[in-house]
Length: 471
Image 1: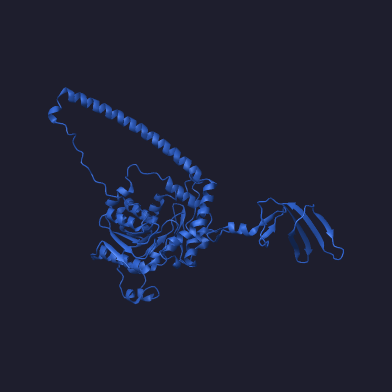
Image 2: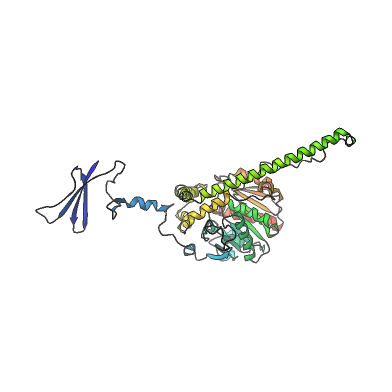
């Protein structure tokens, strides 16, 4: 297909007429009755190339190519966030934002101290304002979930501080919020960051660090979704430092049943037969078979370890590629805002302020690579050979535990929370009605109320049923 473009030199620029077709080559001519200079250009255009009807947003490059600037602008935006001018996280900080360095990482956090309820009537109702704080003397540390940040705790931080009469701190885990990003693929051999900041171990140590930061012996850990996993791992790392656990919509796969211990002592053989020659021969054969079996098992284990190592290296090479970064950007662009709305029972409550709060970290430099590295750290994490899986250690938790879930959670179903409450001895389960994956955002009053009941029971001697349905 051949288009003829007529360029007419005008006082305010060049006008383009694309309504005619021609097979003639371009020519330059001047109209005898006017001083306007015209250019007629005939060019072949591939059939896959289309032009908008109005030509809006189209410009010509220095090479004479037509560029759809409108489409390019759309490509530079992810979840509504312009990707042209990414900033350092500190440049996006709020007035109440704080930063501290831990293991070479600048961790963004917010800290609220208890205030008199009567001094802030905008946050509490009349009945709640007259309720005295519990004065626990135990600070709270809030741990956000995947894709979230300190922003997700904004509605409850002041209320929890006033409720407990203690400090409440929330921090952004690496790869999220405004905590600094580090390229671990380039700094793996560096001594500046000895521990992968995107690993679970780092999050656990950072949590324990903030207990010392608050000058406390113990703290109450409140984890939401994937943050619940960090809270539980922190408990197993230092149970003496954790006063209680509050797990909100916990993304912890609960075991179907608590494993039973079977006693297998004794081989059932008669002691009178041990002196017989047949028994001695059987004993020798048994030892030989056992030795051969153990040797085969050890050899197979080494082969599995080698294959696992090769698999991890191959997976890391893929995750370190530009393709993985591009894939993450595509996923966030396609599903980022939709995932926030899905997390709510009533998606109509998700306004621009909430969307801006969740997408703000997309304005930071290196957010996409950090998210890829976080994913890599989770997928190739090394399992400890000395510790059983987490699901088999849940029954060892002895501190007070509250599990809060929404009955309409579409991300982590409430039945998983119910199963988890059965796996953790003496834990208390609270189910909030007409609530999705974010009880502390969607049902603030109900959330604070169940936390208050739990703390009164755990530290004030108040007994309550193990299952509550909050309307």
